Each structure stands twice: as structure tokens, then as C-alpha cells.
Amino acid sequence: MELVIVGVVVALVSIAVTIFVVKKINKAKFDIYIEQAKAKATVIEHEAEVVLKDAQIKAKRDNDREFKTARREYDDMLSKIEKKEKELNHHLESELKIIKEQKTEIVEKNEKITTIKEGLKRQQKTFDEKIEKAIKVLENASGLTTEEAKGLMLEKVKEDSRATIASIFRKKYKVAEQESKDEINNMLSQAVTRYAGEFAAERLINNLPIKDDETKGKIIGKEGRNIKALEMLLGVDIIIDDTPNMITISSFNLYRRAIATKTIQALLEDGRIQPARIEEIYNKVKTEFDKNMLKEGEDVVLELGIKSMHPELTKLVGRLRYRASYGQNALAHTLEVAHLAGLLAAQMGGDTILARRAGLLHDIGKALTHDMPGSHVDLGAEICRRYDEPPTVINGIYAHHGHEEPINVESAAVCGADALSAARPGARREVLESFLKRVEEVENISTSKTGVLNAYAINAGREVRVVVKADLVNDDEAILLATEIAKEIEEKVQYPGEIKVNVIRELRAQSYAR
Image 1 (cartoon, rainbow, N blue to C red):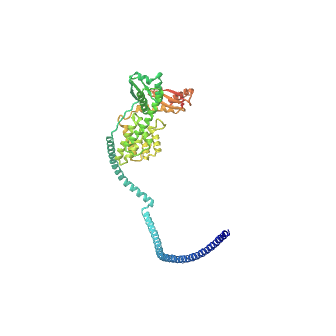
Image 2: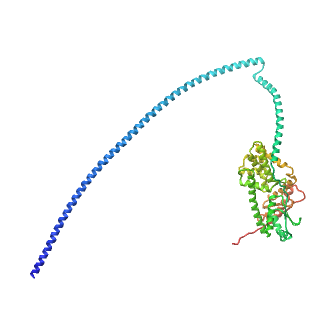
Image 3: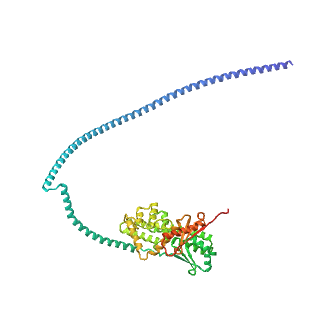
């Protein structure tokens, strides 16, 4: 037992000694590590100081080098600037020297000029005194003053030269007169022979063939409803019973008559003839006519070689197809004038294209006379000014009716061409034109009244149909309006027989189911 206890004690003591020894050893090692770390830190610190010193030395060396380089560049630049300054100063000194020399020279010349002027004045004074003395001597010798002598000399010269001038003038005038007549006749004959145009004779009626009496019945409609709708909408007189299997469309307005003819043709082809369909076809045909007028105007402008023209003027040119003057188609007359004016201007050394342009537009106002009051000359000039046409065109419009004198060769060519076209045998008929003017006056009087929508002269001008706005004119006012129109026609228009005035009042109500 004791041995066991002794063994345990020995073991415990051994363990304690071992632990103590281990601790001592570890402590010794730790101290060694600390010493080593301190030594390393000292070495690192020393190395850092060495590196820092090297960096400072290097930075100082680089800084000194850059400073020396900059200093050297600065010295070079300063040297160049000083050199340039010296050169500039030298140049300025040279220029100032030259300016001073020139100034001195100018002063000397001015002094010489002043001396010369004074000498000239003295000479002029001496000359004037001598002239006065000579004039006095001449006046004393002749007994006349200077003004009287001048008058006698002028009269003598006039008498001597008057007879000579008169003789030369008579000879030149006779030669010029004969040559101008020959030249003008030659120019006109050449222009006329070189132009060949199509001439269309316009009438007051269009005839449309119909197949049978059934078609005639459709046109008339129940109780005449269709034919009344046609006449009121189209503004023409439709005659069915005069000629078998023929519909006659009568109107002085070519445009209105052409639309009516096309509308009735379309209705006959369609077969459905009733008021609603009539209005639909009419609107469609009218739209198509407006497009065709623009297309025809563009073709005419292209044919004449005119480069550009406002679309509204081009459309009015096409509309001249449906206008007549003294029985002569306005567009045919316009083309004839344009071509002849171009030929005449070319022979006189003028601008051919400008002359054609002025000739094309000289009667453009006639396309507006059915819609606007005023003469075609004023209307044409106004519409051409609105669309910036050249002054020659405006002058041609006025000059061809004698309102102004032609300002150049082109305007004169338009006047001559217009006279040629109008004077061509068979071109115009005075009776027809007076009839057309009378019918236009009747329509204009009717449309001038308040509340009137449209007015159509039909039946060869013996009847006028006035369509009024139902919301502005009642039944009683319609009767009064018809009386007023008839009275004004009696006062302002000269006509044979009588003219019947019909006032038509129609109220339409529309709505849409959606």
C-alpha cells in the first residue's frame, strides 16, 4: 500500500516537475521570439529609413533636372521674344520714317496745288475781263446785247435746219411707214400660216338619243318628278317631246350643259332614275369634271412649253373649255392667241414663252364671270396678281381691250394675236353673244337677292328658275321675291317677249340611324 502511495506521489511530483519545466521552456522560447521580432522590426525600420532617404535624394535630383530644363526653355523663349520685339521695333521705326517722308511730300504737293489754283484763278479773272471787253466791243459795233445776239443766232440756225430736218423726216417717215406695213403684214401672214388649230362651233343645245318610250318615261318620272329634279339640280332645260327618240338639253352655259349631258348619260346607263340617284350621279359627275378640268389645263400648259403655273390658274384654263365668247369657244380662242402671240414675239425678238403665257391668260377672267360679278378683264388681272404672274401677263390682260398701252413686245403680240383670232371669218357671232349676255344678266339679278341659293336661265332665256334657301325664305317671301326679280329684270334687261320667274323653295331634313 505504501509502495502504491509512494508511486503515486512520485508520479505526481514527476508531472508537476514536467509541467514546470515545459512552462519554463515555453517562456524562454517566447522571449526569444520577442527578441527576434524586435530585431526584425529594427532591421525593417532601418531599411525604410534607407529607402526614404534614397527616394528623397532621387526626387530632389529629378526636381533639379526638370527645373533646369524649364529654366532653359524659359530662357530660350525669352530670347526669341526679345528678338521679335527688336525686329518689330525696327519695322515700326522704318514705317514711321516712310510715313513722315510721305507726309512731307504731301505737304509740299498741297502747297504746289494751292499755288497753281491761285494762278488759275488769276488767269480766269484775266480771261473773264478780256471776254467782257470783247463782248462790249461787239455790242457797240453791232448795236445788240448778248442775249439779243444769241436769240438771233438760234433763230437763224432753226430756220436753216428746220427745212433740212423736215425733208429728212418726210423721207424717213415714208420709208419707215412703207417698210413697217410690209414687215407687219409679213409677220402676221407668217404667224397665221404657221399656226393651225382646231376650231369648235358651240351651240346652245346637246342631243342625247334614247332607245324607246320606256326610257323616256323613266326620265320624266311619276308626275314629272324626275325631270323636275333634273332641271332644278342641273340648271338646264330638258326637252323630250320635240324630237322622237331624242332628249334635247338646252342652256347657254356650256359647263352646266356638259355636266347635265354626262349626268343623264350615266343615269341612262345605270337605269335607276330617281331623285336621290340623280343627285348622287350629279355630284359624282361634277367631281369628275373638276378633275378633268385640272388635267386639261395641265395638258394645255405642257403643250405651250410653260414650265410652271399655279394649280388654280391651271384649273381655270381647263374651265375655259366650257365658256364661249361671241359663239367662239374660249379655250380654243385662248390656245389660238397663245400660239400666235408666241410666233409674233419670236419674229420681233421677244420672249416666246412669256408671250404664250400672256396669251394663255389674257382671257382667264372669262372662266370666273359665271360665278363672280365684274368684267373678265378686271377678274383676270385680279386672279393673276393673286398668284404672282409677271407684269407682262397683267399688262396683256388690260392691253388687249385697250385699258392700257402695251409695255413690251410680248404684250403687243398678245393684242395682235387676239385681234387676229377674233377677226378670223366665222370665229364669232354677235347675235349669240348678245343673247348670252342677256341671259347672264338675268341670272346675276336673281342670285343677287338675299336667300337665293342658285338661279338658272332656261328655255332659251324665256324662263328663270330661282332656288332659295327654305330656312331663310318662307312661302310669302317667295312670292314677293319673284315679283322683285321680275320688276328688276324689266328695268335693267332688254329682251323680246316675256321672261317667267319661278321661285322654288324646298326644305330637306336629314338624319342618320347609327
